[in-house]
Image 1 (cartoon, rainbow, N blue to C red):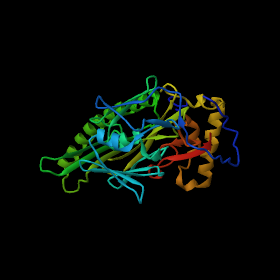
Image 2 (cartoon, one colour):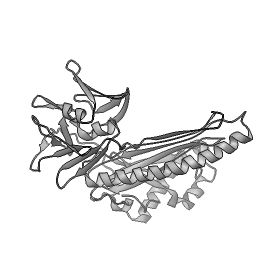
Image 3 (cartoon, rainbow, N blue to C red):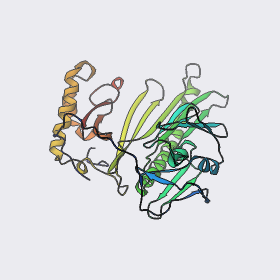
Image 4 (cartoon, one colour):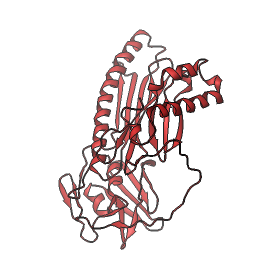
Length: 353
C-alpha cells in the first residue's frame, strides 16, 4: 500500500534530527503579481479603499466587502477585536490575531494566516470566509482571479437520515471534508477530487445502510438500533510540496462499531498522486524494514492488545500498511483486524520527515 497513492525535496527516514530551531518571521504581503480580482456568484467585488493582498500564500480581503458580497451581515466589536457575520441561521466569528473560525459556536476552520488590520482596514482570509459559509472557491494562479460560488459546498458536508414508514429512524449517513486551503490550482484540483469521492461514497453508503437497516428493522423492530455511517475527510500535513487527505470512517450496522482510516497523499505542485518513495530516499526494502520494526515495537510494548501471532501477521501484510503526512512527521498505520482485534482500533506510529 505504501507505494501507491502517496508522497520534491527528499529526506532519509533514518536521519532523525534531535532538537529544534526556532525562527522569528514577519508576515509580509507578497508583491509583484497582477491585481487580485474577486467574483462572488459571477459578480465582481470592487474593493475601493483597500485591495486584496497575499500574505504567506493566503489571500486577505477587506472584511465588510466580502461578507456583504456573500449576502451576510457583519459587525465589528472593537474591545474584543472580533468580527461577527450572520447569514440566515449561521453565525460566523473570528478574532484578530487568532486562527480559529467559529460557526455557530464551534471551530470549523483553522487559518494559517489569521485576520489582521492593515492600514486601518480589517482584512480576513477569503478562503476561510468562503468555507465557513459552505461556498466553493476557485483560484486562477495565472490571472490572479478568485471565483466564489455560494450555492456549492467546499467543506463537502453531507447528511441524510433514513426513516421507516412508521417514522422510526433507521440510519444516518454523514460525511464532512475540511479542505486544503492553499491558493493554488493543485489544491482546487485535489479538493474537487475529494468532493467527487465523497459524493460517490455518500451514494454507496446511503443505499447500503438503507437496505440493511430496513431488513433488520423488519425482522426485529423491538431490538433494532439505528445504523450509522460517519466519514470525515481531513487535510493533513499541507505544505508547499505535499499534502495528505485522511478519511476516518465509523460504521455501525448492528453488533460492534467498526473504525477504519485510509489516506491519499498528493503533490501540491500539480495535484497528482504521490508515493512515499517520492518523499524519502529510502528504498522499498528499507521502508519495509522500518515499518516492521515500528509495528513490532508497538507489539512488544503491549502484547496483550495484539493477536498472539501478530508479528507473523505483520510480515505477511506489510502491503496493507498505509501512511499520511501530519505536520513534520510521516504516520504509518494498519487498520484493526490485521495484527490486532477490531476493538484495538487503528494501530499507528510516526517518524520525523
